[in-house]
Length: 574
Image (cartoon, rainbow, N blue to C red; front, side):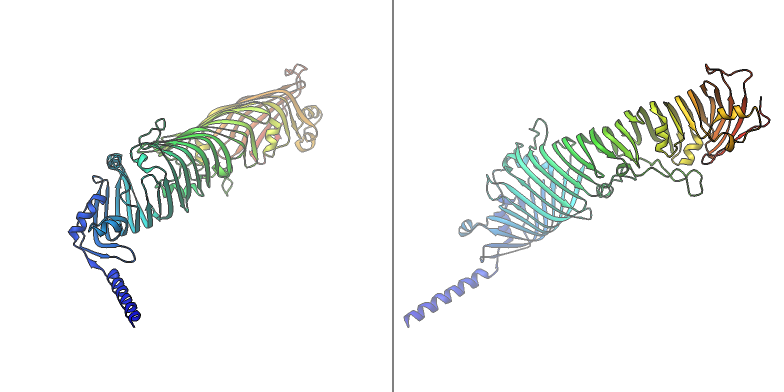
């Protein structure tokens, strides 16, 4: 009987202890404020506070207002739970081990936090948990801040020598974000010294990984961070808008993948050993990013093997509209003024919609809305191509300049690349143009400049002017019957045109060969895309000089570019 009584007493004691342990005991809010101040800083007395002992000592408080580190850290929450250390609690002291905030508004000022962090002796809390709320992070002296909507967040720092780990899920600018980071030596970092750091950010519009060394005082040869980084951005246009910027151009590349060795401070990011995939095109090189209050500047060098331009800048624009006239759709966009570029880009081969240039090296610049492309060197049709193009908006008007020089090229191969296979010859071309407007129609109508052409060892197949001069002595000729067989060959040819007022006028255009001299006069109607020219054919001596008594024929070259008509002018001049 005695054993039953003892068991009953133990059971009753356990039940009583459990009941007392699970019960919520009210605690004086002022005592809560006084006990928690040494660990947490300036904590206002909560509205209510209750203590439970089981399953672990926990203090639940409502209406939390907490400010620490001389105002660098501020919290306001509807409610909070504090896990208490058991030892101090036996002595009647509330000493927090962990803190859980519910529906909290947290503010962090990085500029004001630096001085208090230097005096940090150890972790004020082993664990900080946030369940719902917002976090504002800013730098008051630098004039920036941003907000995060936090669904769940957790920070763990269990010992002085141990790492600090943090993870959070929530939303930033309307997009879901998962973030985590780990700092190996948080006390060293708090004093401005170097600590290893790892960061991971995952969102629908980006994935970012950082792994290296961090020194808040810039003790990494002046840098705050030095190590490896990688980034994946599925859509550059959407990513730019997520950051509050419009894409630099309407035809921004689809996506970006990046891996590099990085060195960074608050305003500059330097990337070395860059492996970059932009719009699916692979590059290697080095890049610098410099941030200012108004813009971002990017400079560096990039090199590629085979380079498809269409994924980077889009397909060649449609120059002609559905009605057959010059298109009125813009082909030169209004460029961004928040991004500056200064890049050197090279490739073994560059291809744009099937048309290729070999070994191009170019300088690409964008500054204050002015875009420049300087082709330093390239191979085209077995010749050398150089040139420069620029476009910018001036007082609401887009102005563009183009200068091209092609030397020692296979002009027949060049024209064949665009579908014209009845010409062969070696030579060069120089073009200099200035135009206004963004649409092909505006550009053609305002174009002003000149062009020059030099050809050697040329041949024009399916058009035989020599045969025409021989036959005209006997009877009037018919082009389709008397000139279609054979070819017109010439040793040298040159031409110069002046461009203005919507037309290109032939100033000096002629060929020279034994037996035949050709001269072209008149103009090309650029606006209506039609010929208004004349061709003069004269027999020549073996040295290529016109013979005074030789046959002479004049032709009219008229009609649209797509189907011009060459017709003799009667009566023949001989």
